[in-house]
Length: 67
Image 1 (cartoon, rainbow, N blue to C red):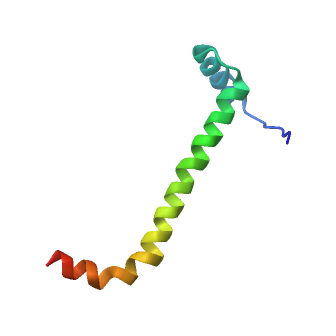
Image 2 (tube, rainbow, N blue to C red; image 1 turned 60 degrees about the vertical axis):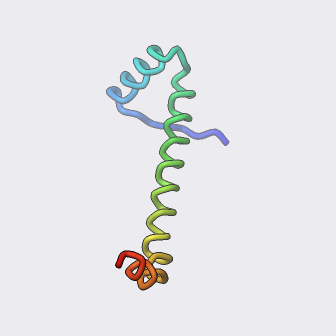
């Protein structure tokens, strides 16, 4: 799927410098950044869900184990 990404001049300059430094296309740098963002936030969301939903179920057992 194609999409348009509008960046400020400063963002474009920073992306251009990064891609030149890494000898990769600006598109490759952006796509990797998006993948990393999604992966990081997916883990955080999963951990938050476990802590909010699953941990309370085992709170008593965990308390006893801690004694």
